[in-house]
Length: 573
Ligand code: DGT
Ligand code: CA
Ligand code: CA
Ligand code: ZN
Image (cartoon, rainbow, N blue to C red; front, side):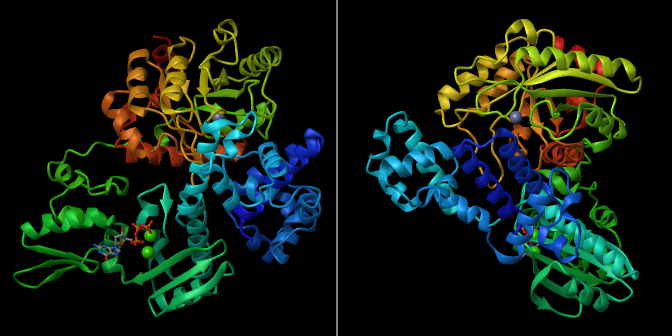
């Protein structure tokens, strides 16, 4: 079982325990474990193989650790089998469909006698499901949409997991093979595409064959597909394919350029080179007339030889980047080091794992000038959201901590729920007291386009709302985006000065790259936040910055590259 399968099992256990009416503490322990495991950069199977103590992972104690071991080694879990036995057949399969929570799954199986996803699909198509009390046509339609998208889902891997695998492979090889000179990820991963088909790694070494042998021998490798002297392909735990290619140092520049792609970018580049009487391939640049091949140790000199400005990998999608590079007009893109603060962070006061102090210290360690603490409001569907009373106490704690620290400004905030009718969970009176209000959708995600758009636009018109969080609420590979008129939201953002968040959490990346590109064009104020639920999540900033770079953003396009005073006065305009 891979991490995401293990994580799903814990989610299912939490769901079933909820139906049983178990204590919220037990339920939350499983939910937390599920979330932590989802984000782990290392496969649990790998850790168990290396005899690592799983209890070192935050939020994982003895009971959960032994369940993980059982699942990873036997492929199943007796505890879940027994628990399942207390419910109608097929309930877990129904719960697997996005949009169906434990309660709905139970009702569908008991009231309709449905136990498979196929039978459910049939019932929806025949209009039977919509007749169920308190369900209705709209919900049924949504469930159908989810079932169908589940069926057509391709096997691409979200970038968060793929990057973790690539970094692990590269560091393991560098440790094992001191003769390595250079080694980098290329392909879609280097371009920071949101999902990855396979991981491409390039390298140079004194002993390429030795590196290839170490690669196929890594303990995370499950299957070897190709094993040559300078090239190999493997499948690692969790089913991701990794290719490794070794070349001589003098060809590395051309190689990594070629395999970074994208294919469309390379086609544009080749057309451009052909007009100069040059041809391109992974070995170098060939003068078509003389047949002479010029080699490149680094990619920068490859682009320079073509008379082009260096093109950052994030822009290599075959749009207009080659044209602009010929005129040296590519923008200088925003970088992680430009970011001066994180504006969406949770603590254990709502559904985060860590305490206020720990989150703030983690932000200080990043060298941030400011950090906003934005715990959830007491909305529907959110575990442990803050009542107005609890929020007031939380604000007091934040002020106290802020006064004791001189190197960082802690902003009071909230991630306030946008209710299905567009109203907010808190009164204007309390919102007015907060430094930062992030408003987000967390419920009624199946609303139709017009209703959803109106709902979000209405929240943006509230003068206290500074930022709209994760606009489409999608979870990569897990939950489809809501149906919202993004263009209308962008126009409202320009009108009202409400900022839109680029949620950097690698499971969300929401806004996504193409949205960011359009938003920037329209002059929408943009912010990159991590939505951290634990200290280590603050590291996800690089994913958000990558999305912004893929949207051609300069640092001036991103609000939280500004110093705190300037940033706050922009929001209060
Ligand atoms: P992926 O793996 O689907 O996420 O996307 P990429 O971009 O990593 O694609 P991949 O792994 O098939 O190949 C890596 C790069 O190598 C690709 O972006 C461009 C280059 N490349 C691979 N095969 C070809 C090809 O047949 N023609 C051209 N022009 N380029 C290729
Ligand atoms: Ca690839
Ligand atoms: Ca490949
Ligand atoms: Zn949220």
